[in-house]
Image 1 (cartoon, helix red, strand yellow):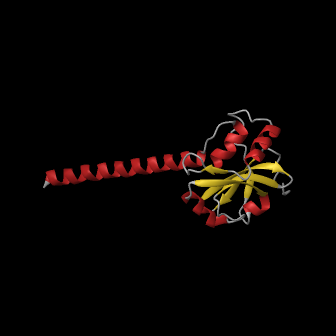
Image 2: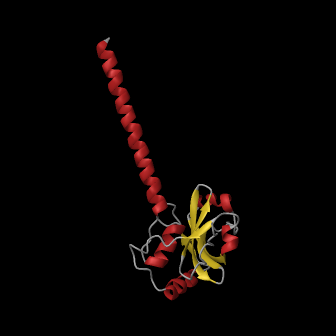
Image 3: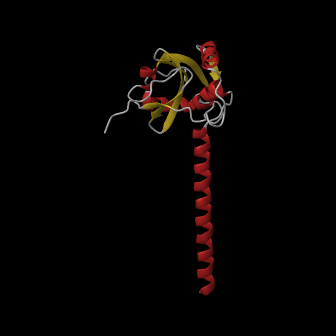
Length: 163
């Protein structure tokens, strides 16, 4: 079987970096560089320690080498909403991203995270499926626990009535 290499990112592509416990997102701007959100204290390639980014209210827009940002974590090009939204022209995506480099911006895990940031640049729509998926999972888990509790209460009531 032939090994097919990952496609080289193109300017404007979304890069999904597989951190332990979550996905970090960046936008590829060419020549090996990405622009992404990072907490003011985060070092490039911080990997698992960057989970601390969830605890900050501010982020810095940084331009760094993709290999440094990814560190040892795997990554892939993931323009997953191209079928739903029309991507902005790469030149516009890059220009907007470059203008933000060095700025401190608000950061909220649920509404202004790195995935919202890159989707906003590529599509003009800030969204995070990662947040949606966690909320859905929590809702389903909560619903499941509530259902189990209800079933348990019904069996318990039935048992008491028979006694």
